[in-house]
Image (cartoon, rainbow, N blue to C red; front, top):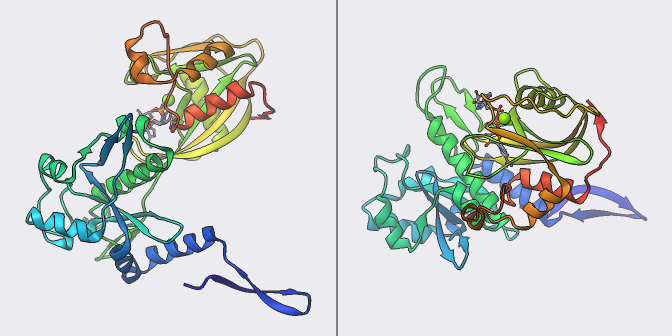
Length: 352
Ligand SMILES: NC(=O)c1ccc[n+]([C@@H]2O[C@H](COP(=O)([O-])OP(=O)(O)OC[C@H]3O[C@@H](n4cnc5c(N)ncnc54)[C@H](O)[C@@H]3O)[C@@H](O)[C@H]2O)c1
Ligand SMILES: [Mg+2]
């Protein structure tokens, strides 16, 4: 691929070509791999593979951290051969990114039933033994992965899950076929193209000016509190969703809103988490809990939340009853929202 943008710009009396930045080159390379099956297949030869079993990534423990090992195509073919499988199965892999040096990264699930090969799933214990790692539930592993691996494995899991659950056309009932990169599936009978989807979700840290509101659902790990979250309904703007969710879940009306950041979240299906800060109407802070949605919700002081952020290791805290509550892991956008509020509790917000 050309390293130049091809857009001539006139500087002084001669034409020059602006070299593309590493980021733009990488983005264009990934675009090419998604569009061109042959280029993608070629990229697998020098690429690296992350392995999953029934959507659990293969991890290796290193002290208190988990590492996500990469495997080359050759290693993967050798592994499949050892377990009596053909290399056709590699066509189930999905493209999840690439390095700055354009080494493409793929993810492959060895536990799900293969759509491109008649081979059954590989037995988990045997593969773990062979690869000296363990297939670990991603939710648990997130606490002990670095941010880059956590984000990469979340993308991989979401994409692998989407392919596993979209193998048939919802109109014709016929099987759909993925492209090499896994960026889409096509129904061969009517040519309908299906693209991986994410549901938009707002996550809002509500404040009354001095305190913030944290809540928990009954299935959260014991003692964990987070910001309020909710799926956008059809037809809603983000502002409307924030207003409705806060009213639905804790019976409060938010007045002002400030967008913070967004994040892809793979659980239980792909969501695009859109994170906001909001403030309630002055003097209207009495929580009316919706028990169908939440188990508990409370106002927490700046000091309480700052202390909880500093000692935020769930494993030690779950055993130590002296700590009243703990917060989501660093990787979760809820953690970032709470951290932002602790660092700057009063911020300029827009009316909703
Ligand atoms: N990354 C983070 O920091 C973070 C923090 C909190 C929550 N979350 C995620 O936010 C998501 C939404 O939070 P919530 O559960 O409080 O939402 P919610 O308050 O909207 O309640 C969930 C309910 O909404 C309904 N619903 C409507 N549209 C849905 C859809 N597209 N998919 C599934 N259910 C739908 C279902 O009845 C479901 O039981 C959860 O999946 C959760 O994993 C992420
Ligand atoms: Mg909710």
